[in-house]
Amino acid sequence: MRRRYKRQISKYEEQALNAEGKIIKIDYKNQIVGEKYKTVFYVPSLLCPEGRRCVTWGHTNINVGDYVELKGRFNDDIFLCWSIKIIRKSESLNEVTQ
Image (cartoon, rainbow, N blue to C red; front, side):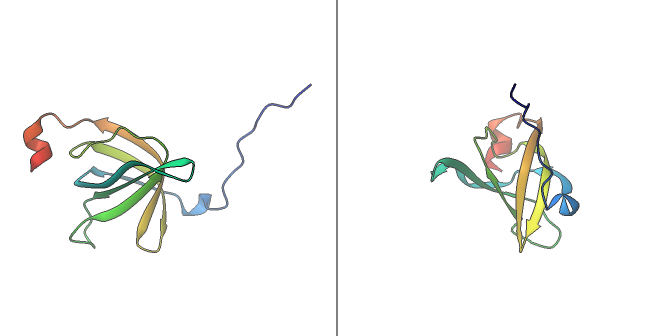
């Protein structure tokens, strides 16, 4: 009888942070790197005037103007997202272009 897969706790679990924000810019969306999808986007930050750079590995359907909830950790100045939850999609094209 096979054992059921049990998720192992990450060694970075104590560094986990939850953040919320609006996506202000997307550099790469679902770009294939190796065998994975990579998405690079920015959310507002008090410390970085251009926004905080966030990276996630995996297929996403986020757009500029979406409000998202992020869970992940910092590696240098980059926020590595483990999970992204879309709270609210952008309502109109006017919001996307601003």
